[in-house]
Length: 202
Image (cartoon, rainbow, N blue to C red):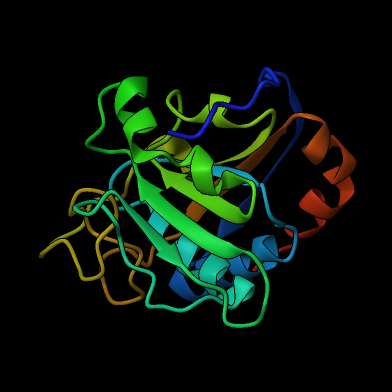
């Protein structure tokens, strides 16, 4: 297993901003915008309930980074590496939904790839922050904090452990609220750029 980073994680949120995202296409667009800020060594932690659209956002990040797809929910394989198709950082897309402890996270050896990849972890809040001295926490939910009532199935595409994704088809295309919180000097330096990606999405 690779050695853990010596630097202690900076728990103080140095920048925070939010935006309402109307639907699936705009969620992917937001992911593409965020990808423009990411570089090798960045750790992104995604939080939010089932069906919030975490995997949809990662699809946009993958498109923005120019990695080999498709980007799908990694729930059952835990982690996937998407190689760059244009010489940029690879994307490590992990899902900690089924992991119950930091020891199980250690077994994934995510820190072995962290220095030369962009690492995005769904359901990673409280489990992976100490992999790096700073991280970007992205929280996705519904305006008002409660998911609208829907009828029918869970939709296609998956998000987390089989919940309905933000698919753009029926269920899942209601607006979401996305909040970005940057921790550590890395994101303090990029505060203005981070806020800039959250211009209104139409």
